[in-house]
Length: 373
Image 1 (tube, rainbow, N blue to C red):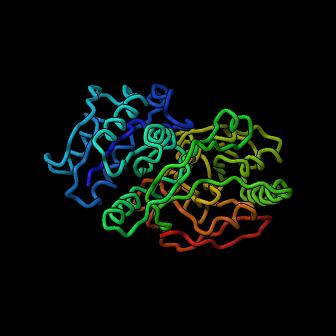
Image 2 (cartoon, rainbow, N blue to C red):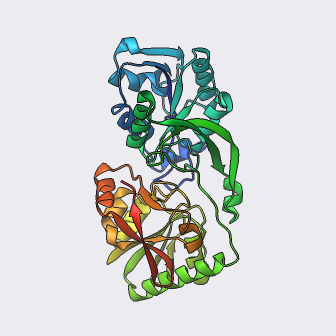
Image 3 (spheres, helix red, strand yellow):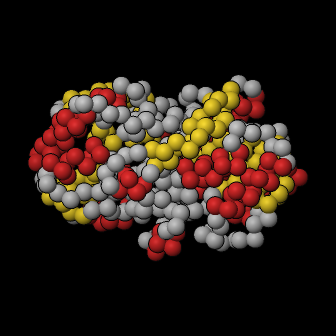
């Protein structure tokens, strides 16, 4: 089979340092201590993919460098020369040109490693000419072309090769960040692409849910979390992104960020929009750490999508039993499984071993939800 492959080398770097993406803020991400994650995640997937195919790629850090570590030299063909050898120097135009070169070679499938922005760049060239498959590495991923984690992307590829998985239309989506910063959670649909579909391994597109009682549902959840803070005044509460967690700050009449991670202690604001480093620093002065995160509707992700500041180190500091997964009943009706993709295999396995986790859907009202294995 002829496979096109490209990496967005800066994808995901903004996550742990509290940025809402990396495009356009790469230098700032570096200043904050960000490290590359895309190559490692791509390698996890490629190592598990069946061999003996022809891999068409872009030069140096856009694909060639990694493929040469895994596949025989005669299976790799560089069809777009990227002279840039430094992460941060490549641009979306490199992705566009590489994908055009793949199409000229009549590839059967295009695999990319990145986030929604990379998916959009690939889609703008491919449309529905050939299937695309994403290895998730971005800060946020709402499109339906990604495996739920790198290992799942590899399994999707292998099933596609063996004829066990079908090709289906999926939505290419992205968050309108400007409106999101204004408190409006709006997902823009860029179009429909072809991708490999197998319900256990592919992530569905994010869904937004609205109903007349949504605000009341969020208020009930927030009332419970506020009571938990009052009962544990010496614990640091780490509030992840989203409108459900933001309701907690709103009821306490505190400032809040919609996209970021905020820290509270004894119902008082400690710091807004923090990165992993600040969370761990404040944790040193707390008796315990408790994490409140929203669940992404339809997908079920509660860690590893848009909240990478809450890193494996932060989760280990808190403990899995001190994670509050929040969801309104309206959203929960459309979400059958929970998922985590922290980037740490040991932690992901511990989460899977729990089999079920509680989701807070009201004031002291829980629902046990199965964790996707």
